[in-house]
Picture 1 (tube, rainbow, N blue to C red):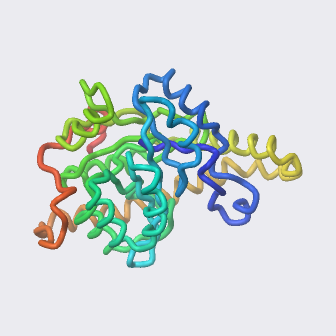
Picture 2: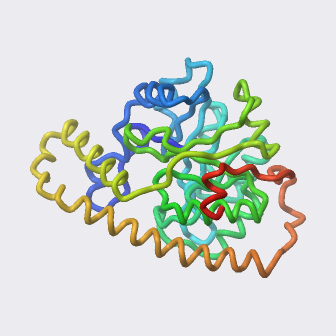
Length: 303
């Protein structure tokens, strides 16, 4: 439910974004590797783009998705996964992504499934407390298992989803081929896309797979760097800077750990002490009854 390809666009790292992409994974190779790793229902969630998905839509077990880069009323940026929509709706989603109220109303009116991704991550920058009120009131799902997030961040996201009675999703968030399919979402017994989403809505979904690690992130950054140099040979002049990659990934996880500790403590404490009723103006969809089903791994980690 969260995987990227070449079409996710330029990376967001200062300076590097001038010449480096988020991912160099070929969509067909992503599909083939996911199939080898046991997937039987497929999607791509490229950033604000469905071009890569167009190459896979001939597969009967593929559905259209994307990860929208959205602006919250507070001015912060978040990533919203939107799943199983029609091609003609893509432009409408892009048009509304910087007006979160318009976006969630559009998604709700058309009964499109969506989630807030890596809720306790600093990946998209700063967060404001009011952002979480939006997530609680209007989002049907929370990504609770991401193979590039720290185990503590996944556990906190799972705990939050359970307290808010949200659907929990899992995905690899893979930007390099070796990581695709290392975390995933499953619905036992589902035979097709319709049964899969019906199972998610009814609380039958489960997440499984690995959490993030310094070694995996460092490997993937080296893989992306190698693909960059293959595509743009002049960047080989920057090869000595590759020695700094482990330092950068270590600093990234240090920042991620601090961000998760601060925000999980604030939000989960507030959830404990203030059980606010949902606003009457909030749409009836996507509020879901039923118990969230988590994987044994998520439960064991405290989720």
